[in-house]
Length: 143
Image 1: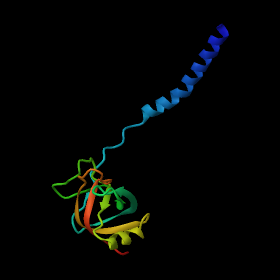
Image 2 (image 1 turned 60 degrees about the vertical axis):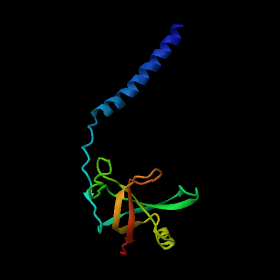
Image 3 (image 1 turned 30 degrees about the horizontal axis):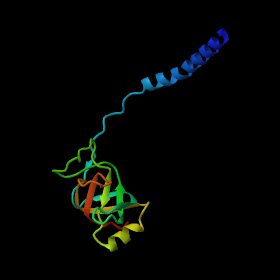
Image 4 (image 1 turned 180 degrees about the vertical axis):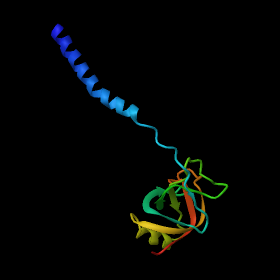
């Protein structure tokens, strides 16, 4: 019985010694500096970032449709949208396609860095939107 107790005690002591440096390292970390709001983006400005594609279900028919999204640095939207209830502003922007030609055009840029001229932008408000902001009118800028 004493041997079993000694073995368990040694195991607990070893675990405590291994955990102590990790705990002290975590306590030594300082909090990250507060995030600054992103720079503003207005209608007519250019937004650049990586283009991602997702398939989402259409709310009307339940049909799967492509959805395109740009991931960028945080940006502030013009009033009244402001920061979209986020500390720094949105980082993901859904590109709404108004035609099959626009969808085809975006398809060739998936996974690549693109730039779009923003003509109309707002915070996401509908359930099921995968982005923090929605760009409803846009055009691709050729580099």
